[in-house]
Image 1: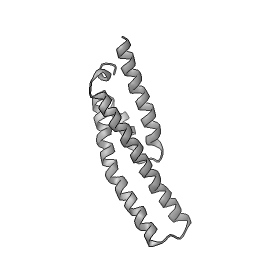
Image 2 (image 1 turned 180 degrees about the vertical axis):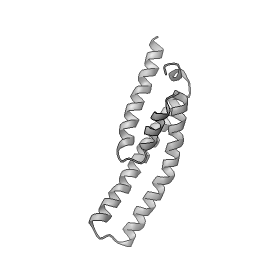
Image 3 (image 1 turned 135 degrees about the vertical axis):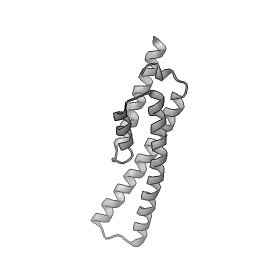
Image 4 (image 1 turned 90 degrees about the vertical axis):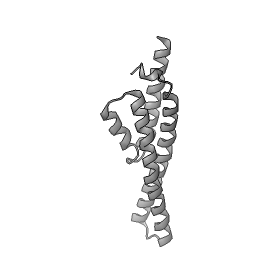
Length: 117
């Protein structure tokens, strides 16, 4: 993996992945919050329309997140298991935030390790 970290595309791929992970995670939390509120409280049709719009928007954002995820995964030459876990980050609440932090630190450490060598 250390040779992959030298690829000049890594910085851009990591930046796009991090941005999309935060945006996707935020919309996913909004979707789940809407679903929880709907389950607990008798909501209006306007609330349901807004929740539906947020859910639909999350779906489109998730596609962009997947593209950013696949690009980083390809550039870093990671295994298939990691791609699956990264893809789950957009559909499991809060997971994208943890994965974004973990993989950003890992890529930065790999880049630092290759620059020191």
